[in-house]
Image (cartoon, rainbow, N blue to C red; front, side, top):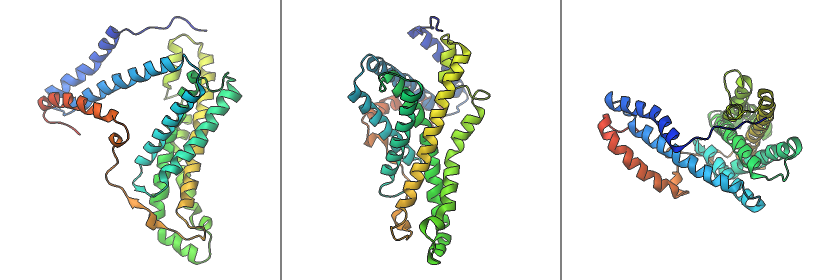
Length: 300
């Protein structure tokens, strides 16, 4: 059951911003070097959420399958890029492995939840499909990046052990299955912890929002359980998928380890190379630097 929800005005947003203004003043007075990051973070928060809000408000009024799929494709591409960006080693095809694993797992979890559990019609209704896909991807980014990093680092660190087993006649799976299983276990730690503490330590934002707009707590809980299962299933499947695809990429069909494909990455590629919106953020940065000069330096 719903009641009238609280509509937030621009004035109320400005009043809420006073909470950060206090921190900004303290940073300047005590020269903590945080003013630039606080200012940029606040401006980005407002700009990004308002843009998303207006876009979703428009998107929710239409039911265009092509447009929904286009938005989903953009989200998947950005998620796969972000997951790989967090790893220290790369190889040709790693982005494809990340994208493919996220595509299959997120599509499976989102589609099954919307069509098989919630019975939403049409199944691509953006009011449900886009937010659910976003929640699954945001969690899968962490699990896949952890799984990837664990697999690649351990494969390099234990390469002599793997090579020795291969020399003795072991298959690639027999030689590296412990590393693979450890990578999957490492990657799934965040989502398992999420299930362990949800409702006790962690109250998801969507759950809090539903309670605040008047939904009955028991209905909110049932809905959140459904969403949590979708998030967990999608994240774990994505981790297993990317680890297994990467494992196969590191070996030749005749079971030879090819670590020469790996390269160590120090400087991360910038999003400005992919998204021109980053140029707009540079203007925000200049504004932050002006306040940062009065704050005992500029933090990075």
